[in-house]
Length: 119
Image (tube, rainbow, N blue to C red; front, side, top):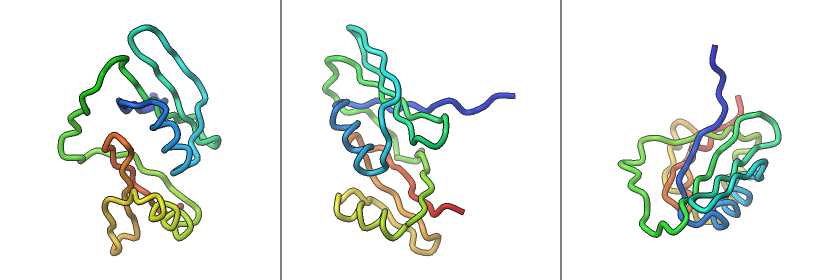
């Protein structure tokens, strides 16, 4: 059997991305790997072992091609109203599906993150 470990997003500005994920979702760095070619920072939620790996290739300046944004990570939250108010204040909501009671936010590199109520 396999268990989830982590997922990875490539980012252009590691510090900006770390700050976004902390402010928007409360994710904190739990591990780092750095060398002369790249930096990896693993963000955790403090509740599960799953991490989001932010990969920053040193010297890269071109935005990544994210296709049609058809892939995403989903985050379950206790208080949808409070979280949505925070994301509205951050002006990062990029799509809302009121029928399903969910919405998406966009990170600094264009990745979509789904916000769903905890069930």
